[in-house]
Length: 162
Image (cartoon, rainbow, N blue to C red; front, side, top):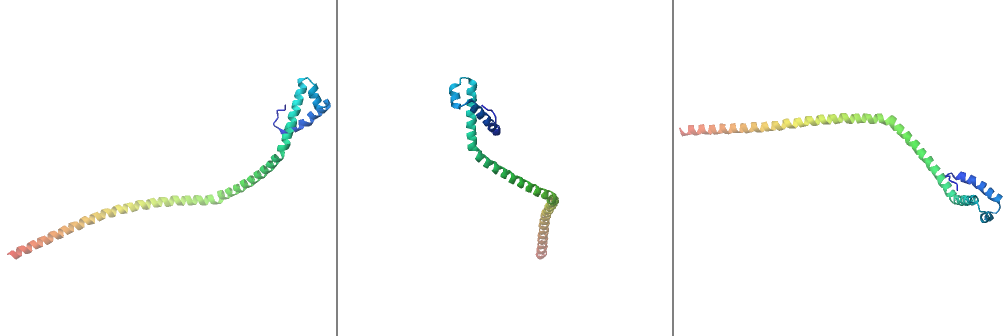
């Protein structure tokens, strides 16, 4: 038997084997009358070649169709790959610089935002302290005013009692 994965080599061997069997005579007579194992191996090899040729005749047209479809698919893939490469190159050349500028702007704006946020937090703390102080000052003034009123009322009561 042939141990080859190449179909063409099997097909090339096919005519040679059939020519040998036709030289020996009728293949049926050879298989019935011969006794040597070499002749039986040749006949087995011939049967295997005929069987493989039959399978090949059945399977080859769909395989050729699939091959043509694969070639077409590979061609389309190559075209898409080329188009994508061109678009990537355009993106790399023109838009990467703009993208880098935008990213640096984002970084700068983020820093500004952090700075403003920190300032706002400081202003909030100062206003909170000022409100507390203002409340304390107002409470002190209220107490002073209350004391002054009480003192005035006390003095008036003293003057009125004399």
